[in-house]
Figure (cartoon, rainbow, N blue to C red):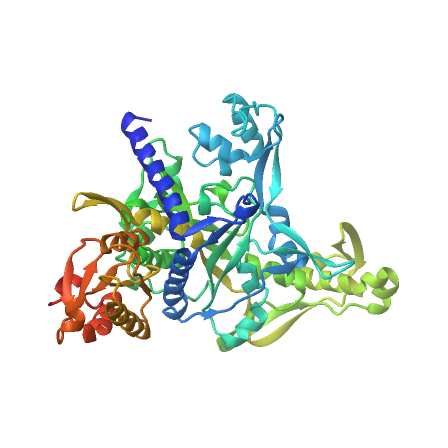
Amino acid sequence: MSEHDHAAANAAESTSEKLVELAKRRGYFFQSAGAYGGVGGFYTFGPQGAALKGNVEDAWRDRFAVAEGNMEIDAPTIMPEPVFEASGHLDGFDDMLVECPDCGESHRADHVVEDNTDYEDAESLPIPEVEEVIAEYELVCPACGAGLAGQAVDSFNLMFATNIGPGDSDPGYMRPETAQGIFVEFPRLKEYARNQLPFGVTQIGRAYRNEISPRRSIIRTREFTQAELEYFIDPEEDEPDLESVEDVEVTLYPASEQHSDDGEEIRTTIGAAVDDGTIASPWVAYFLGVAKPWYEAVGVDMDRFRFRQHLPGERAHYAADCWDAESEIDGNWIEMAGFAYRSDYDLSKHAEHSGDRFTIFKQYDEPKTVERATVDPDMSYLGPEFGGDAQAVVGELEALAERDRSAFDGDTVEIELEGERHEIPVEKTGFAVEEQTEAGEHIIPHVIEPSFGVDRLVYTVLHHAYREDEVAGEERTFLELDPEVAPTFVGVFPLQNDDELEDAARDIAADLREAGLSVTYDDSGNIGRRYRRQDEVGTPFCVTVDYESIEQDEGGVTVRERDSTNQKRLAIDELPETLSAIRAGDLAFDDLEE
C-alpha cells in the first residue's frame, strides 16, 4: 500500500471513529445492554437513528412496493425446522470458523485471511485452501497473537436455534432472512395475485445470524433489518421493462474482471451491460437499474458505489447469479444489498418437502393434445409388499413416469425409497401412455430477489454524509443528510428565553408538525450552540423566532439552511407550505424570495 493509500485509510478510519462517537452522543446507535457490559453484535437505534432508519424503510417501501405495484406482508421471525430443511439453510448456511488454541477466541477464518493477506474474497475459497493460506502466511489470532497455523477450520451454521412450545417442543429457528416467510406462504399469496404472473411480494423485518465475529458497529451484527422483494415470474414469457432503465449509468465489477490480474470496474449503462452479456439476466439488470437512482436519492455517494458480481464460490446455494450493491467505507467495500436470480429453487424445495402445490396454472392460448405417462398401481400387490410405505412407492412411480418413461420398458422398474432400491413388476404399476387434451399446465415460477440490508445502508448514508468545515472561524461537524431521510426536518428556536418568543416558537412548531413535518423545539443554550446541535444530527433547516416576528405585522422568521448556513427571512404563515415543498423536492431553498 502506498503512502497516499495509507493516509487515505487512516483518514477513513478517523471518520468512522468520529461517526461512531457522534452516533452514540446524538442518539443514532449504540451497543445494546451497556449497563450489563454490552453484548457483541446487538445495537440499539436511538431516537435519531430510529427515525433515520424508519425514513429509509419508508423510502424503500415507496419505491419497491408501492411504485412497482407489489404486495407487502409481515411474517413471523421464528419458523419451524422443516422450513429450513427445505430451504437448504440447515446444511448450507455456514461460515468458516477457526478457534485460537491459546485464548479460545473464535474468528471467521476468511476475515483473518482477508485482513492479513492480499486475498480479497476468501469467503469463496474452499476450507482446505483457507487452512493452507493460514499456514503459509503464519497468520495469528487477532485477540492474543497466538499462531493459527495447523488449526482446523470448521463450518459453523449461522442460525439461532430455539424451541416452539413447552416440554417436548418442536425445534425452530430465528429466520436468517425474511425471504422464507414469503416463500412458504406462496400457495396463499398467489391467490391474492389472482394466479397471474408476474407479481411481487415485499417484506421489511428483522433477521438473525449468529455471526462468529460481529464487528464494525452496525455493519456486521447478529440482529438486523432486511427489506426484501421476491418477484415471481414465468421465465419463458415474462420480460422486464428494460427500456425504463436502459440509460441508467452504473459502475460494475463483474466476475471476469475480479479474476483478471489487471481487472477493473466498468462504467456502462444497464442497456449496454445486458446487450454485451455482462449482466446475464434482464430481470436482475432491471432491478439494478431501479436501485441505483434510489440509492442516490437517499444519500449514497455515487463516487463510492458499485455493483459487484458474486464469484461462483461465494454465491448462496439458491442463487444462479447474484450482484451486490456495495459502498466504500473506511477504504473497504461493504455489501448493502444482493440482487439474486433464485430460479425455481425455493418453491421447488418447499413443494417437495411440504406436499403443497407451489405452482401457477398457465393457460394455453389454444388447448393442446399431449401424451402423458401415467401409473395406476395394483395396491393389492403394493400393500402387502411395502406396507406403510405403499403410498410413498406410488409417489416414486408417478415421479419416475413423468421424468423417464423409458424406465418402464422392461419387465421390472426400479425405484429408490429411503436409500434402498426396489424392483417392481411393470405389470403391477399400471403404466400407460395416454393422449390428453389440456387447457394449460402448472408451472413453478422463477424468483428474482433484491435483498437490502437496512442497517448497513443507514451506516453508509451517515458515513457518506459526514462533513467537517469551518463557520465564522469555528470548526463545525454536520451530516449532509438528504431531507427525505433526515430524522428531523426542521428545528424551531426562540432567539432568547422569553415567554412571548417561546410561545410563538411553540405555535410555529405545532403548525409545522400539523403539516406533516418532523420538528424539534430547542430553547437551551445560545443560538449558535443550538445551530451546531442540529447540524450535527443532520437537520436540514432551522427556524429562529425573534422580536420582529412578534412585534411587527408579517415580521417573519429567519430560516437557516444547514449545508451553506445561508439564512432567509420568510413569512410565518407561508412556512408550512414552503418547507413542505422543499422537502418534497418541488422547491429549492436558494430560489426562495424573502
